[in-house]
Image (spheres, rainbow, N blue to C red):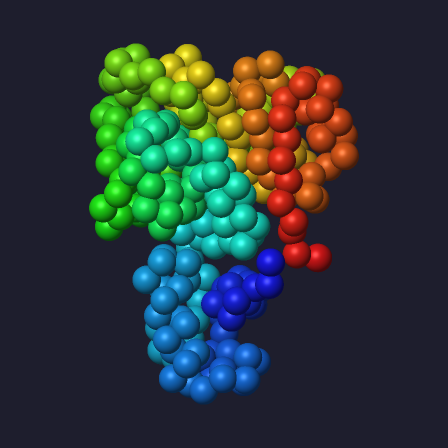
Length: 253
């Protein structure tokens, strides 16, 4: 898949952190008017910021910053995940940048889907798609990750039963499985798993290079993994050996 200009601009800004609008116009051989339109589109998506004739990356603590990292490959993963979902399905989606792009992709495809999520970020991210019905789970709000956690969230999840759960991850261990960075989120996502027939992990290959703080899922709890073709060979072998379906998308060299 060839990159469009907006994706290339986003990658350029991510590499340089701060770039003058005039420099971007010269780098991509387009007019200032054209580059400003591209930047406006990217800013409206929350993928970068503009001020004083400059384009800059988001704050590293901002969820939109994580969304912008490896954006193109995350989009490809989201498209493949969306192919698993049919109109009239009810699914669960946990927080994460690739999960947000999955929800967006379902909206773009105009599929009539009900999404149950604990992510206020995702609920807001896809608020303008009329085909999507969003059920936002209640609970204790974590401002940093923009998710709901705690006993109220876990209790609410028990009221639902769905075919598909889509989850991001923060790390991987070939023997123990998937990890995340937050204990409260790990508790919630385990409750989600108990209410879903199938679990699909959505992540770019960088997450397979390390484990993290809190155990999320053993491999025998996972049905599908969608990632990119740069996945570490040892991790890919462990997933195959556990008889988990793994699907990879091409990552730009």
